[in-house]
Length: 141
Image (spheres, rainbow, N blue to C red):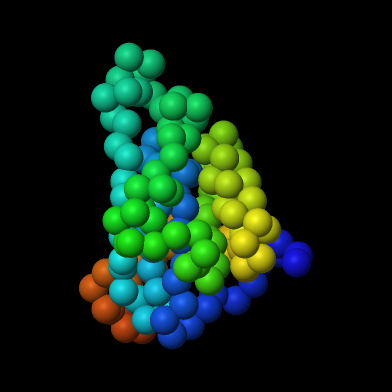
C-alpha cells in the first residue's frame, strides 16, 4: 500500500489524528461524522521553561496509547491515520509523520497529511459545527 496522501474516510470511519508541530503533542480519535471520541493533549510549557523555548525532542512525547484507551479502541479499529505534515518545528513534525506512516503501513490503512494552518482554519467546523462560508483571522508564530 502506498503512503501518499489520500482522501479522508467519511461516515463512521475512525481516524487517529496526531499533532506534533510544536510544543504540544496531541492525539485524537475522530469519526467521519465529526464525533470526537478522544482528545489527549500533553502540555509541556513547564518542561520548556528552563530552556527559554521549545525543544523538539521534549515535545515528541507519545499520547497515542492514551487516546486509544480513552476512546475504548485499539489500532485494529482505525480506518485511517492523519498527522501534521507541516508547517511546524521539523523535529516534532518528523516524529509525528513517521509515527503515523508506520501505523498506517502496519495496519494497511490510509495515511493523511494535514496542513497545520489549514487545520486551525477548519477546526471551527468540527468543534462548533460552523458551516461555509465563514471568515477567520489566523495569526501564527
